[in-house]
Image (cartoon, rainbow, N blue to C red):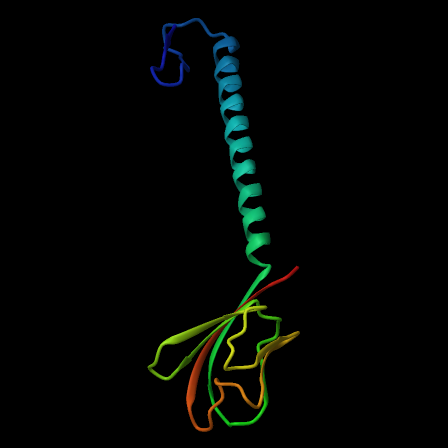
Length: 137
């Protein structure tokens, strides 16, 4: 009995005497190959799920606000670990929790960041762009 080159399946020819052995052998080979493929796919699925679970812990928010010169809360719905602030077309400032600029008093709070009265990122009528990043604990 001949076999396929790649997979070694039995090739049943019309001149062969009928026997279920060759068909059963092919079925076992297919079953083993499908089991290996399923195990590989399951491992890949588990890895993807693990990555998604980790990524879902991160939160991102971005927006634009117009400075009002007084204290204000920028509610982003989570406690940021980092905020990037940019005044119109000027350079951006990256503020990381626990690492404050000396000329500003931006505070990270449970649901966003707080721009205090003396904050350098809330000049009246100036337009700011922000990007905040946070992570569940």
